[in-house]
Image 1 (cartoon, rainbow, N blue to C red):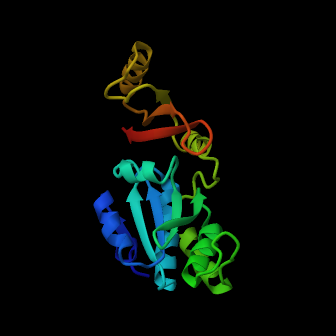
Image 2 (cartoon, rainbow, N blue to C red; image 1 turned 180 degrees about the vertical axis):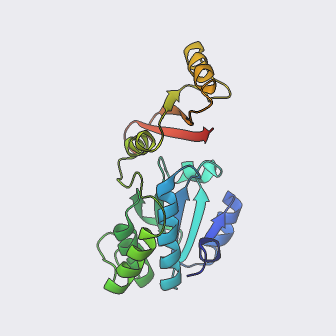
Length: 214
C-alpha cells in the first residue's frame, strides 16, 4: 500500500483547505496530533480508505498547527474526523474507531446516509489489517480528554499535569517538580499541561499538550 503522505493530503492552512474543498468531492478531514499514538493507527486506516474509495478526498490537519480550522469545526480532541459533502458537515467521528470510520467514509463515497450506512466486508477486512499494523491503539475509546489521560498514564512512567510547560512552569510548585524530575537522569519524563476551557460542543472540555524527553 502507498504511504499515508501519498494517499492523504496534508492541509497546512485555512487557505490550503479552501483550495482543497473547491475540488467538489466529498471530504474526510482527520484532525491529528504528533503526540497521539492512536492518530498514527487511524492514519493507516484513512490511507487504506483513500486507496479503496476513489469517490472521496481524504485530508489531515495537525490540530494545534491549524487552530483556526480546529476551532471552526469545533474539534476538541484527537483523533477527530469531519465528513463534508458540498462543503457542509454531514457527520463527525471522535476517537480511534476504525469500523466506524470505514462505515462513515464508505457511505460518504456512495452518497448515502453517513450516520447509518455500514462499510462492505471487503473494505472492513482491509481496514482491520491497516489498523492492526498502524501502531499502538493506545487511547482508542472516544472518551475525549479522559481517554488521552488514560493513554498517557498507561504509556509513561512519570506524567506531570501542570500549568505552563516543563520549560516554562507557571507556578512555583510545578517548577520544583520539574526541577526534581530533571535531576533524575535515568527517568524518562512525560510532562503535560492540562488546559480546561469552556466546551465548544455543549460541555466542559480540556486539551492536553504533551511532549517527552530523556
